[in-house]
Image: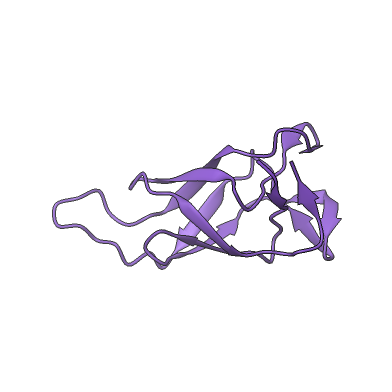
Length: 106
């Protein structure tokens, strides 16, 4: 699945609107002067407003499930705008809203 490579400065939100940030982006590969994100990079979610009655609480962390199939950094697939993820404990995906538009990966 081709798409623009996700980097540290990308705008990523949980489905409910909480801000998601990578905890350990790949410092060896830069796009637009910022480190990229790989499949092994966990995300933390801040400000998720979702509080279901009697439910499992708001989004706290997220992990990528599917990345690029042909482009790797340090042995891990890079994350592109079409990549899929899952938030814990809600099970909802992350949404990549804005990323750099110069470098693509497949």
